[in-house]
Length: 272
Image 1 (cartoon, rainbow, N blue to C red):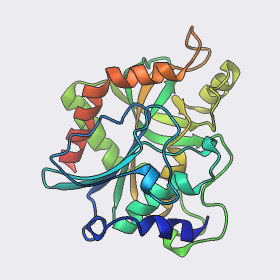
Image 2: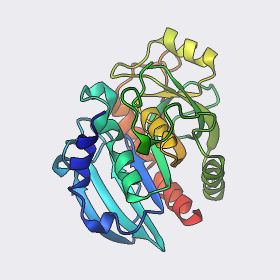
Image 3: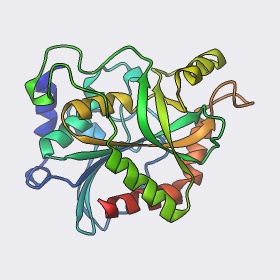
Image 4: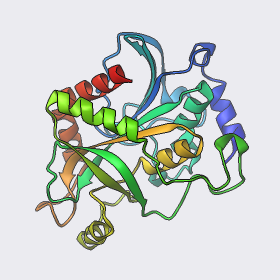
C-alpha cells in the first residue's frame, strides 16, 4: 500500500483529532449508521471530503467521520466503510484504521450486518465475534513491509480481544439482548453466497458470513490495536433462508434494531 495515500488523508484532519487519543474507535457497518448517542460533537467530516477515501457506494453507509464525547470518553466513529469489492484497492478499506492509529487510538469496535449460518441464530440477534475465517485469500498487509504497522508476520492467535468481548456480553446481558460468541466468515462479495458455499462455511465452523470487517481487524491487530467485533444478524444465509436475499432485508433489519444497537454501543462505551 502507498504510504503517501494515508499521509494525504491525515493532512485533512485538524489538530483537534490528534492532540488527545480517542478512548475508542468505531466502524459502523450496514444499518449501524444511527447507533451513536454523542453528548458533544467535536468534529465531523464527510467521506467525500477526505482525500483518498471517497463517498460510500453502499446504501446504509452514511459516509461520515464523527469525533465526539460521551461522558468522559472521547470516541472517533466512522459511519460507513469502504469494501474490497468496490474495486478501489485496500487503501480506502483500511484508511479509517490507519487514521485511528495515527490519532493514538488503542481500541476499535468493528460492526457489521451478517447472514446467519448457525441454526440457533435468527434475524435481530447479535454475534460477538471471537474469531474469523478469511475466505477471500487476500490480505491488506501484502506488499512492502511498513514498520509502523507492526511485525512482518503478525500473530493472529487472538485477533479479537477477550476483555472487549466480555464487555460486549456484559452490555448485552444488562440490556436483555440475544448475543452469542461466533466465528465470522469473510466473503469477498458483492454476490451473496450460494447454498453450497454456505454449507462449506458451516463445515469450517462459521456462525455468520459477511463481506467486511476482517481486513480492518487484521490490519488493526497487526498495528497493536485491540479489536472488538460485533455483528447484527440481518438475515439467514443462502439455503437456510427460504427466500431470495437482498440488501433491502439488511437495511430493514438495521432499522428495526436501531434502539438495541444504540443502547448496546452506548453501554459498551460507558464500560471502557
